[in-house]
Length: 183
Image (cartoon, rainbow, N blue to C red; front, top):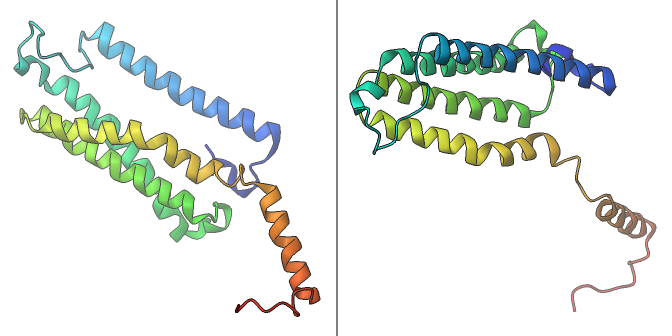
């Protein structure tokens, strides 16, 4: 949604537009999951080890095919965003390199989830480890990644920068020329 507004994404209107578009995507995702769970009877969650359902039933392609398609869709979207700066649309895109590092990390993480889901769907038990690792990586690292990409510059201490600016102005004016710092 941020990319659809280009470099002019400011103000209340942009925030409302972003929330509406994100909410629409979340609603579609929730409806698809509800249809799979309640309509088709496919469990989208991993069974516990003490579950009466055997492990083979958990490795059904209906479940893991959905997760493969789900993460593959996100991976393709992130890869598309990574390709956009190399097109004629680059003038309308954010110029911050941190945004593209953020997108590249999410693309790589979703690719790992695709590989794990395909392994489990193909009845390889080690796919649980791959899928679990990348799921953990996403949930453990996403909040700090989000903070470093979008919010860290917002919370910079302005007083610290003002002190450096004041010191710089004093140094340029020659206030410290008489002081020998080599002692």
